[in-house]
Length: 222
Ligand SMILES: [Zn+2]
Image (cartoon, rainbow, N blue to C red):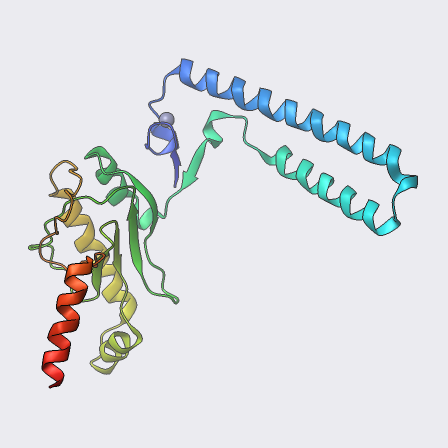
């Protein structure tokens, strides 16, 4: 499903104002037009310089400019195309997160083929309580902004050994994620040094913590 950049709603349900749309389209068209004119000018200049260059050099520069023009011709100029694609399987989860004020960068709903993962990368580190999420050990909230279900090869092997289909398992985890997202409170950013509840979270260890861990390991060795 295509989601509008302006309002984070599916494109058919976009709530952006007519004024916003018109302004955006005007700007996009003007920028496109201006850039294409620049490229056209550069092409003319290049052709005028042809005799002063080697054949290979000329061809390369010509190809670069033509590729660039091709790219710019594809630039969207209708507001409907000011959008991004979200996997249908995770759309409801993402719409709910945005409604609650959680800003995100990327997400993946997980696919039947490898690699089998689900992830959401948040714009900021948000506070979460995972205590009643039901997520299994394959979930991590890494660096305080990347929530992912990423079973290791060993974990997948273990599932297969006991007759669990890893993709079905992934789908169940995705449903858990959706249910958990629906009960979340409004977004709140993590405070400095604050940890989330109920899930493993990697955080950058302070120098003091590193020294303490090293001392503990040394003591254990003796
Ligand atoms: Zn919109």
